[in-house]
Length: 205
Image (cartoon, rainbow, N blue to C red; front, side, top):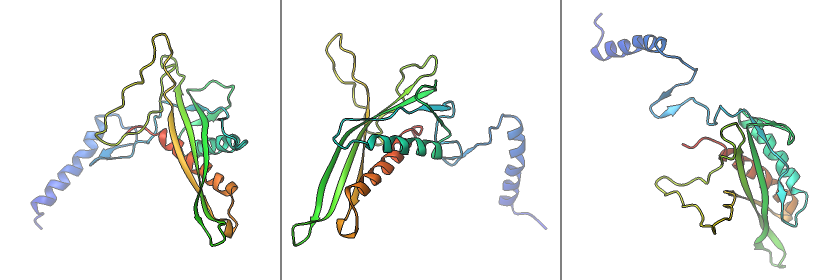
């Protein structure tokens, strides 16, 4: 039976794949048509130190919940190992809870809160601690395609430049009529913001 030309070309291409692979070092990943199996994170980094987040708001105790959530999410979704604050590490993730606000979305006929929303703002710095990279900042604000990188801030001579923090926001909703409270909304804030922190640790596209 005669094999069509298109099939013969495809078979020839498949036959060349082992030869091409044998001539190079393969690490188990590949890229094809713009898609890749390479990890989303920098695999030269192995450990992250996460001190307890600072909290400058009146909502005390939330810094412990957020730190635990960030550590849990890093270990669940990244190849990195979180070490104690006293241990040496490749990088350090520092966070500050900058603001926590509550706003009313809807009220009932008795002017009672029917639905409300909380907004949590956290400033993040992810620093490189590896020899030769000390002080390098790994956390960078994400920008839309084609958007220019903003210039560094202007500071007076002799003044150290401000820490290049990345501010991340999360929101949480609660409905008192069905048993929701500001505590449940804060839990939403913490869990959602932990995911955003870990997303920020991915390599740029």
